[in-house]
Length: 129
Length: 167
Figure 1 (cartoon, rainbow over the protein chains, first blue to last red):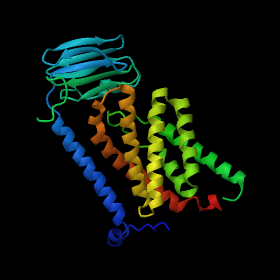
Figure 2 (cartoon, helix red, strand yellow; figure 1 turned 90 degrees about the horizontal axis):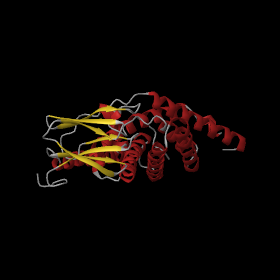
Figure 3 (tube, rainbow over the protein chains, first blue to last red; figure 1 turned 45 degrees about the vertical axis):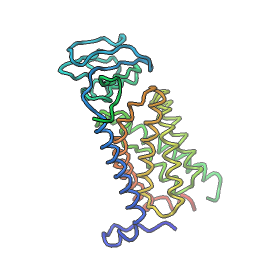
Figure 4 (cartoon, rainbow over the protein chains, first blue to last red; figure 1 turned 120 degrees about the vertical axis):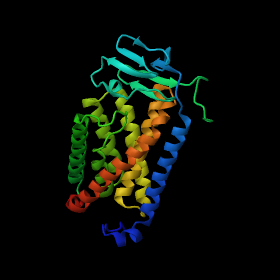
């Protein structure tokens, strides 16, 4: 049978042991992935722009500039950070995405199938940072 | 569930409710500009059907809701994200429910997390990139939070409503 719900704190511990174990392990897994991902990240050196999963261009992050991507988006690089400054799509999710500067930071424009990813000097993610 | 007509009506009603919840959610602008983070209101209907009517019914309602909402206010890629999320989330919830040691809210939390893991998987396939893995922590956390919100709401709903639906 289903356990009857009770929201009083004393009976909560006894009745919801399995619940607590599951919730705490999920939170723990979440914390571990946060830690792992933050260890994997470092300041990137370039952005890799892909359209439809195919490499479109790579732009350095240490030089400021504005780049047209296809006919629908404009990517701006300023002070080592890249952001989408224009998109023709209605949702503008990529324009609102925060500026990307660390390896793995990604700006994705789903309607135009564009992904902008920050990469490191050696090409990809470095675990030893 | 006694009569077939009643069963059909109740399932249609739940599908319609799920669809309306999907629509309401599609009208809410995203609070956090990370793709994939959303409340998952329609999961309210899924959890309800899962506990009130059963697994087969929950899969039917969930699949219909995803197909219809993608046709009405989504796109092809949003369909793949939604169907993968809905099916994985429902499978996980079904397994945990059958273990009979977890409460509804926690089953829904696991469903929320599973939904978001499926989203990451699909975006890896569609975008052909593994960098979306960087979204994993944020999506796990949001799955826990939204799953808890929907789960607690579902538990209240199940306590207050629906006994008469299956009589």
